[in-house]
Image (cartoon, rainbow, N blue to C red; front, side, top):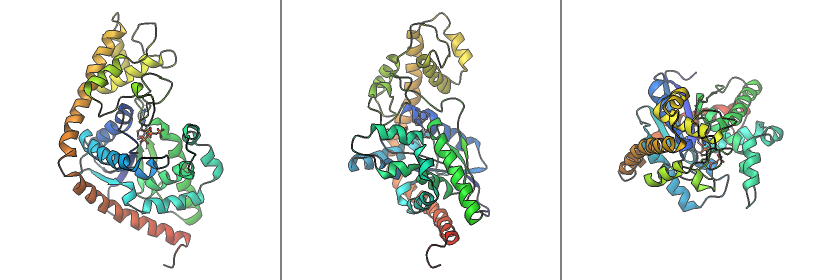
Length: 336
Ligand code: AQP
């Protein structure tokens, strides 16, 4: 379908704040791992700034968050030789195909999206219609590049299902146009929970800062947040997601960074209390994030970011424009 070009893996993160440990373990670290393993695929990772404005953003902060996220992508280990990095709003085709996707999405299916239902309740300044049509834009982001795989956290599963439905619907109505993508959701770490309220996902735009580790937090703050994470009264390091959600969440974080299995962690901490476990975990997390922060500081002030993102934009633009042209033609839009 695409000549000699490699198959594509695509994903993005919203610049709605500083990325969290949840974004890092559920998305970023995974992107880097896949980038290094899936040599037959080309990676497209973008900054989802259009998605960010589905809830109110301060313009200055948004600009800064875009720049920070760009540097964090590289600091975490994405390399431009393997990954095309770009900013969503710089490729107009995303919004244009997003509108086409809205035209084939049904109100009923968008109303069923749990993220919309959750976020709607949190909005005090009114709910934008863009928050409602967010999943149609996400479908456009993916289908525009014929991505085969989309690595995401667990919270995006439902949106991805809708993307598949829309691709199939469009192909049936207008003829074969889009690749139907598959999600890549890790077994472990697809939903890192809030450290103070383990029934809630760790969110970068959440208000409870104490339960959320941000990648640019001072290392001392990170350690403090881990050490004061909510656990339970059993005082036994044992994985049991339903009955011990706090300690199980911490064990997931431990396991993803140390690469030890839950059984190995349980064994290591038999007859040792939560204090020891949390102290070690605090060091592990801070150690991992310190490396990212050091690289981040080098990159953010290096002046290299713009050139890299310009390159990415150019490359993404060619594919996006070609695909949108094809879509318009199939639908009968425009004169040519
Ligand atoms: N807690 C998490 N655990 C694992 N993966 C997570 N992701 C987000 N939170 C966790 C994954 O990170 C990618 C980018 O996320 P996003 O920017 O779309 O969402 P967010 O960080 O959760 O952003 P917000 O602004 O705080 O909003 P909402 O309320 O939308 O979640 C995705 O792959 C996501 O799955």
